[in-house]
Length: 163
Image (cartoon, rainbow, N blue to C red):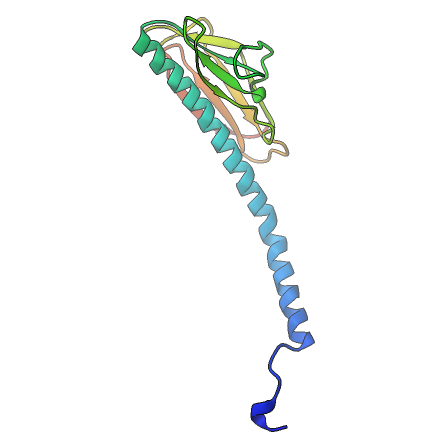
């Protein structure tokens, strides 16, 4: 067998070393990637909630009448159980459904200080201003989000340490 006829490829030893190095790299990378995915889920659901709140406030000022935001299990009526993980809806003063958001099954828990609340015609909040806590399963570090609405109707988001 001359030099040009030699078989080309990897030896078993080279293959085992490559697999070992890949396994070591993956063992360090996967936990960080899982945390990255969890953070992205929290950000997505926080943004959806903030979108709902901003939509309700802008519709209240545009229509010149109150607009309600509430938790909902079926996407059409308020359920009043305080579990916002089941989804939420925005209703006009005539109970017209303006928009609904579905259940957040992959996310942990979204709780609020109120079951429902209203933005008045000038954009302020009628009654108690709500606060929402968005907590992921296996939450660690500052992955929890707190969404607050002040009396004037302004929405703010903060990252806090998991409780």
